[in-house]
Amino acid sequence: MIEFLLPSLGADMDEGTLLEWKVRPGDILSKGQIVAVVDTSKAAVDIESWHEGEVALLLVEPGQLMPVGTPMALLLEPGETAADVARYMRDTLRSASTGVTSAEPKQVTSAVAERRPVSPVARRRASELGVDLQGVSGSGPNGVITLQDVERAGGAVAPPKGGQDGMRRAIAAAMSRSKREIPHYYLAEPVPMTRALDWLAQENAARPVTERLLPAVLLLKAVARALRRYPEFNGTYVDGEFHPAPRVNPGVAISLRQGGLVAPALCDADRKSLPALMRELGDLIKRARAGSLRSSELSEATVTITQLGDQGVESVFGVIHPPQVALIGLGRIAERPWVEDGKVVARPVMTASLAADHRVSDGHRGALFLTELRELLQQPEALDADLSGETQ
Amino acid sequence: MNPLDVKAGILSVLSSVAPELEPELLVQDRPLRRQIDLDSMDWLNFLVGLHQTFGVDIPEADYGRLVTLDDIERYLVARSGRCAS
Figure 1 (cartoon, each protein chain N blue to C red):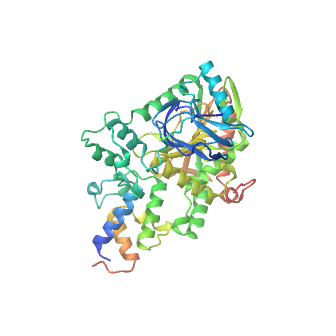
Figure 2: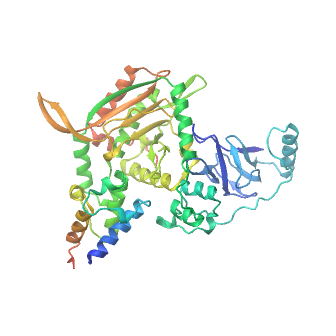
Figure 3: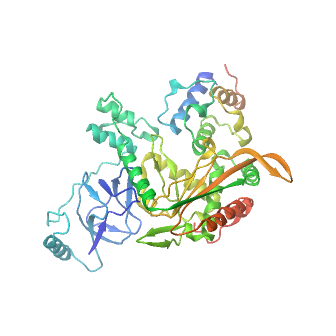
C-alpha cells in the first residue's frame, strides 16, 4: 500500500486546501501525472505523483485543509487488492494516527467541472466573500477570473482588508526563519556587460520578435554554469548538514502583479539551450502569475536567483530561502563609469551579488564564484554553445 | 488604419499582458513603463502581441523609440504603411 502524501512545497508552505482531484479510484497513475490541485497561500498548485500504481481510495475531499504530509490517497502496489485497502484502513484506524474517520471506501463526488483559470488572490477573495467561482465569468486574458470579477460578483465595494494576508504571512514565516537560522554573508561584484549585450543584439537582429532572447536567460545560464563549478552554493541545509544537489534547479523569483512573489524552479538550467530557457522562463512567469504551478517546481529549487530587470535598481542583497544555502541577486544593467586602459569610459555594467550561508561556505569561495560568473559572461557565445549533457 | 483602432489595439494587447491595468488612467505622452509595472518579459510579450495584432515587426534596435503610448501609436501607423486617417 502506498500512501500518497501532500508533499512539501517549499519552506513557506506548511498546509494546503484540496481544490480538486484529477484522478479517480481505479485510475492507473504514472510518474509525473497530476493527481490533484491544491491551493496554497501562494498559488493553486498541480500536485504531481512520484509513484506508479492504481488509485485505490481518495482520503480527503475538496475544500479540506491539510498539513504537509497528510495522506491524501492510497495507491495499490502490484498484486494488492481491495482487501489490502480494507486491512490498511483497519490498521490505520486502530493506531488512530491519521485523521481519517471512515473506513468505508467512499467515492468522492469529484468536481467534474473544468478547473477555471483564476488568480490566487481572486480565489482567496472569493473564499472570503463566499463567492462561487463557477458562477463568475472571467474578464482577464483567456477568461482568467480576476480579483475585480470576484469582487463584482460578491458585490464588494471596500478593498479587501488584508486580502494579501496569506501570501504575506507565508513570506514572513520563511524569511523570519531564514534570518533566525542562517548566518548570511554578502558579496557583490560589478560585471561588465558589453560583450554579452553586443552578442545578444547580434543574435536578436536575426530573430523574429517571437523568438528573441532576453538578457535574463543569458544571466540565468551563466549563474547555473557557475553553480556547477561551485556546488557549495547549490543544495540544501537540513538537520545540521549540507546536502549538495545533483542538479542545478534555480528558483527564479517572480513578482506577482498583485504583490508578493514566488520562486518556482527552472530545472537543469545549466544544461538547457538559451531558446529553451527563454521558452521555459516565459511559461513559468505566465503560470506563476496565473496562479498555476506544479508541485515539483515549488519543491525542487536548489538555489534562488533574483533579477531586478531593466526597471530595477543597481543591486540586491537577498534573504536566502531555507533550506537553500544561497541567493544570487542580479541588478539592473545600466551604463556606468568604467575604467579601461587607464581611461574612464561609459559601459553597461551589472552588479551581481551573493548572499550565502556561512555554515556551508566562506567568503573566499563566494568571491571565486562571483568571479567565475563574471568571466562566463565575457564569453556569451560559449554559454550559448555549451549544451553539455543537454536533455531535451 | 484608423487612429482609434490603433489605440484600441494597443490597449487590448497591453491589457492581455497586464490584466490589472486601468486604461483610462494611462497618460498618452508619459513614459508607459513609468505608469505601469512591466518587466522585461512583459515588455517583450507586449511587443510580440503588437506584432501579432498589427503584423509589424519591431526590430530590437527600435525599442528605444517606443517610450510613450503616442510613440508606439505613431510607430505602428508609420510601419504598417497605412495612412492614419
